Image (cartoon, rainbow, N blue to C red; front, side):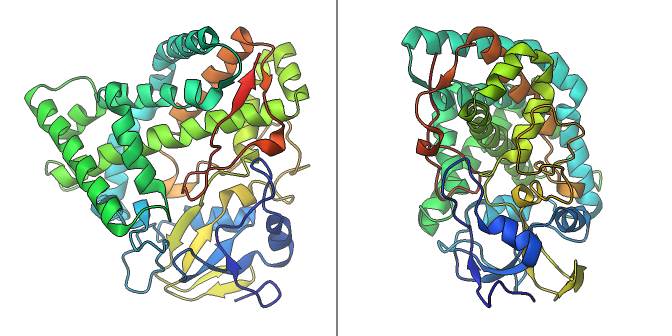
Length: 405
């Protein structure tokens, strides 16, 4: 395996500012695209940073994120590994026909057609949240005012879960998605509470089904034609709640921060609102703080680029580094809100690509459209280099996004 100056890099890599990429990315892609790293647990892994290599590994159906193999690396030094070693990672089917069947059951609810039907309600919600933000006065924290509540409301509605409980599962999500802040016992307790909470909702849905994902899954079957087990139903509900709000809530804040950091982007969008869709895709590509990346366990020896990775290697695919690969994107380091085509890998590729990407795109587009219409004078209330990264989360984000108008 290759090294950077015989050095094993500690992962995650740090960056100088919240919106800036780690300086190592450029060097790794050029000189060491298959690099040795050490996870927070101290276990060894391999970091992949080139676009084609990341696509190759993520597209290969033999490789999954299940890290329960005896020789797989532990990710976190808390032993819990958060979501990586949680019940969700072992209960949900990870490979083969069972995984494909599970995805098909869920993906029906996240089609572009369904998202278009949801769009007016999402827009009305965004408008209402902007009303509240304006009423409370400038400056405001865009993440707390709009970025967090909007996707929470949407995913709760789709699951048939009351969004009045959002503070409870926000706390549980934080524990699941944090690599180093909580102990094994705290994470296990949070998981127990979360499973108990979803279990109560599943029981209520059995008694009185609604037009929501959980009700539909209760009435569905697994790949063998059997009813989906309770543990799988609960893990699915938790997975959708966590992924459905945490990633998009953070991305809303980062998107607006990126577009306001150089306000010429915002001015161009005001002049050319038809660029909203390409602007969303470009901020997804340019997100330097997207989080941990996708972990893959290799059950067979695998060739990646000029390297041969032995069986049992735990690989970390950095989609964010791949998205800045100069061999895949012209002017890769520049944010171009009109960039098209834009084949970024922010949602992953292959059998484990993000199920909710149509929903995330819809929410991001709606938020941007509403803010351009409602608050054309919007600007950051701090300098871009004063924005602060959330530390320790698998999902990258900013602690807050102070804005004024």
